[in-house]
Length: 324
Image 1 (spheres, rainbow, N blue to C red):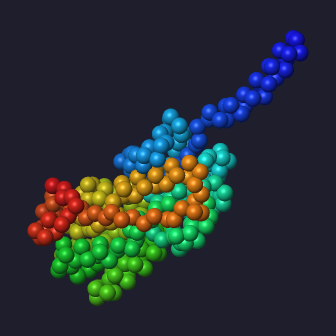
Image 2 (image 1 turned 180 degrees about the horizontal axis):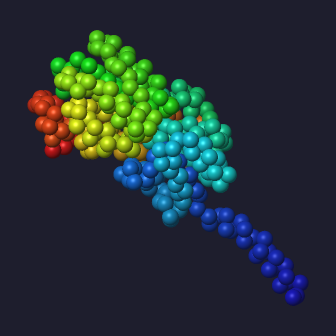
Image 3 (image 1 turned 60 degrees about the horizontal axis):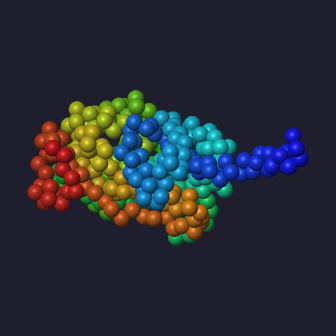
């Protein structure tokens, strides 16, 4: 080979890795405690927000999905895998447990979360206005609207005398939710008994503890494990004649009585938008945590009829959606 040809070939070979890297799509590590089947609409909302920010999966970005399938103990290993893969950003839309796992796994790779409780209390950020680290995102304030959820229950079931709630004791969301619920209940002069369940069998056992009599009801807070089991929970409540109020509409679509909380599709869309901003080079430390501003009340008139509950015209008129 002539010297000029050799040097030319050497130059092409040396330049190739840089050209390949320049053309490579940035990677998003999508980490979630749940399952894809249960979150299709939420994924679509996230992708919508991401696309609005200029990024489309398979075109100019690649998403690596990791689902723990309700086994939260798998999240730390999955987060570590994403760190080793050196993804451009880790997103944990609608999965507080995943956000905590990601934050423990890396202090350098950007993290964009959406959380149902205060991210400062969880150690995800230093403050809402100045996150200060490698994480930022959206807080849905679900635990902070607990008082309104309890108020909705009282309006639906004014003669209720025994209040219950169900929490997953190993969840990061349990303690702040119970704290808010007890504060709201105290202001209304009622007592709420806390039941606990870490497994599907324990959900059944918890429902079995509730007296099968009029005047009982349940108020739920945010919890990914219960979300996955929402159809089963709705069926248990209906079988026992138990009115229930939840944090998101998915439960009501599955047969629950009512829900009040942030519009979670909007929260997911906002999360996608923030992920796009990070991909464009903005630093999580400088992006304030956004707080959800859209909230919705959803009622299931069919379930109300089955439970013998008459929903007032005022509630029907003010509901964002009524499922028949």
